[in-house]
Amino acid sequence: MTSVPRGRLAVAGAVAGLAGVGASDLLTAVLRVRVTPVQAVAESVIELTPGPAVERLIALVGRHDKPILVAGVTVAVVALGALAGLLAGRRALYGQLVFVAMGAVALAAELHRPGFGPVSLLPLAVGVLVWTVLTDFLVSTAEPAPTPADSRRRFLLHAGGAAVVAVALGAGGRWVGRTRRSVLAARRRLRLRVSRGVVPAGADPGPAGTVPWRVPNAAFYRIDTALVVPALDPADWRLRIHGMVDREVTLTFDDVLRRRLTEAWVTLCCVSNPVGGDLIGNAWWSGVRVADLLREAGVQPGADAVKQSSSDGWTCGTPIEALTDGRDALLAIAMNGRPLPLEHGFPARVVVPGLYGYVSATKWVTDLEVTRFDTFSAYWTDRGWSERGPVKTESRVEVPRSGTQVPAGAVRVGGHAWAQHTGIAHVEYRLDGGPWRRAELGRVPGRDTWVQWSGTVRADHGSHTLVVRATDRSGYTQTAARADVVPDGATGWHRVDFTAG
Image (cartoon, rainbow, N blue to C red; front, side):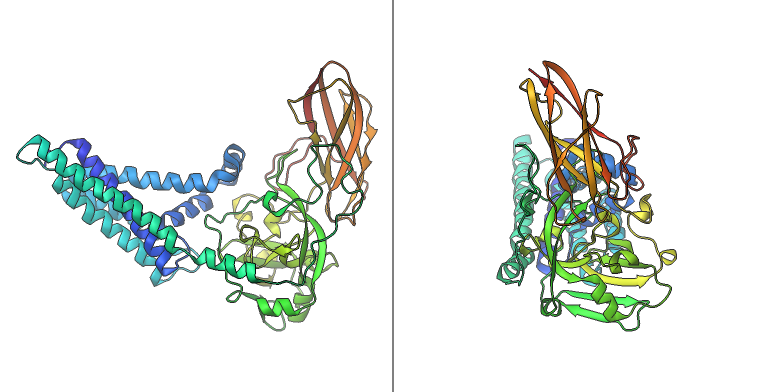
């Protein structure tokens, strides 16, 4: 095989790699396995990446991190396939060993994924088989024919056909993967006894361009570790409550629907939200109070935490007092009057006012274990975040945006401030280091939501800097000292630079 052009060998292996990915994707969909081997590897990459690196990635690519990671793993498979093709040109075994090694990496990723079972191995095994068999076949067709033209034509015919089949397999996997579509259909059929919530009069007094006090579902921020959004049929969903309880409780979705529902405005905030960031949103949530569920199970003395688990294996630890002290900590089933979107936890998630999401807001929740903090660790605490995560008092400027130009003279300014489950007392702003001025505050229904603030400044021609700070109802005024989001949330005053002219 030494006379086979190296380019053909690389193409042979690359096409085989792509075909193996397509075959495993199709079989994953047919068998209704939760993730493909490529997605399992990508999820493991997320889990093994240090927390600060995750933050830098989110800051760099925003919400596109997961598609980029899946694409990167796929490109790596194709590149390694090309290497396998080159090695197979020397000896078939060498190329096969590359694919076996790739399969071993994927197997290691699969072994600790939630829901792993014997069926989960089939897509990976078929993918590796396609890799090795197709590589051998394409390498053999790349060997010289009676004439160079015949050789090239034969190879292009076979490699091109294999590439078309690979793409078709991948497309077939998406077509067959109708689990999400069936769950979406089940979601559309639900008729929940919930309201849409009425935004309080005066909640949105800010100038044009200020973020709405109620954030629509489609615009609500999303941060989670799910590479593939779990598609859980409400008919199959179960919530198990166990651990340090007098009696174990298992709830179906119908059980939840039969209970008395509580509805409340609650603002959620991600611990990864930088000063002035947009990883925060306010919505009207409907569900059952977690305190009632825990009371029914009977929490035993000594318990100080609830370990929450998602269907995809994500975990967090929540102080039990935050779930039982009277605040509207909910097992939520609806958001802004509609069943939860799949991306936000359908059919059920947890919402806890006053805590960052990494210690409370479990989407696709399936398990609540009453326990103690000293007996377990959770997903983000294993990666450098603190054990407890109360939301910090913060504020941001939304109008004007940094870097914009506004007409000189009286300039309307505004934004939001938040201190969930403590409440905002007042907000102050100042221009160019001048005196602090009290902002006008929008009306809010309680202390579990953010508040919109607004005011007016006199901006002459030139460059200006606007700064905002908030004071909560405990009397604490947010610090000017800048702190990173790790380990328990960012601090600092938000400032924007703009030009008047």
